[in-house]
Image (cartoon, rainbow, N blue to C red; front, side, top):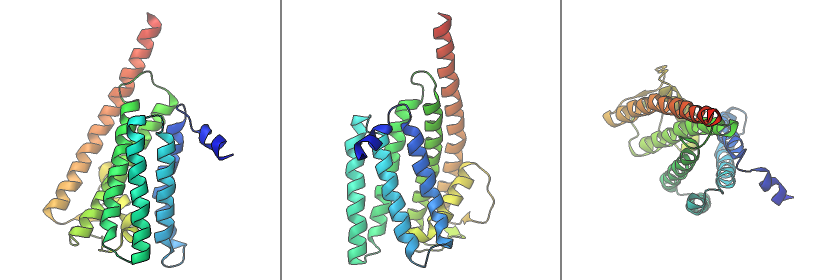
Length: 227
């Protein structure tokens, strides 16, 4: 039965499952308001593991990245267990680093499969949404790492375990990525400001690249039909 469920994720719908997993991970941060104190940490870690698994199943067709991402996911799980058993909060920076590298690898794998390659289809459009979610997620993790190393980097974000700040960091990341800039969370230090404006620049260029890629793919498809 498990094999059949895995086979449901194929090269024609893999980005749909991956996008749903990413959205679920981002939404899981809101569970802090309904879960008992202390449970949000385990909920986020559970959703992270599930997201890793779905990413791996969705990208298993890209053999060059699969083994690398699988290794990162396995090391992250080991680090999570070590943190729980040893109670060492210092391991969190290792977990965040592994998450950032894992999602960056996922980003590169998806980008290779959908941008300026072949004709456009629904799966590729959904894949472009997954890329956007991954951008915001990676920057959120980067902000959490920055906050861990430099606690005074942001106004509106207090230093603490990553699971306590994940929701606010993701919120600030997507607000910055879309250049909304509500102003309730602000970068204070020069390095934090650099992170913020680089994300805003990347967000603008991403939209331009995706649009040009989709137009190029669509144009190639119509050109092939005319010929």
